Image (cartoon, rainbow, N blue to C red; front, side):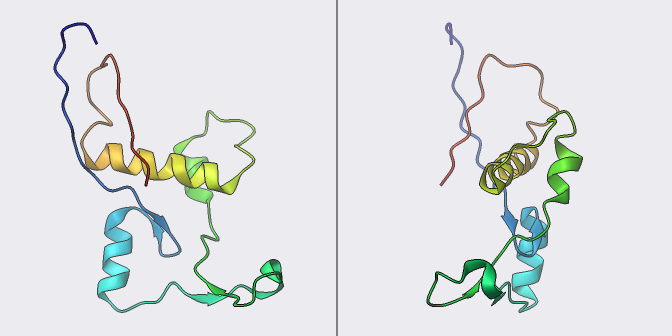
Amino acid sequence: MSGGRRVFVSAIGAVTAHGVGWPVTRDAVAAGKTALGRAGDAVAALADRTLSLVRDLGAFRREFPELSPPLPLRESQMVLLAAREAMRGASLDHAPACEAVGVFLD
C-alpha cells in the first residue's frame, strides 16, 4: 500500500450445519437447536460418528456462479462462503475498489 491507511474491520462469516451466515447460526443456537447428528457410514473410520456436518452447499453455487466447475473440496467452498459472509457483515461487499483486502481465517 503506497501511503494508504490500514484499517481493521471485524466480522463473522459462518458456514455451519445450521446454514450459511452468522444470523442463521446465532438464531439456531439461541433456540437450542443442535447441529449434531449421526454421520453414518460416511466416516466409518472414526470411533465416534456423532458430528456436525455441513450437508448443503447450494449457497456456494448461488454466491459463486462464476466458478465453473466448482472447487473440488468442500472445505474450500466453506472457506469462500465464510469469507464472503464476513465481508458482507463488515459492509465490504459494496465497498469501492481498494488496493488490498485481507481475510483472516481461524
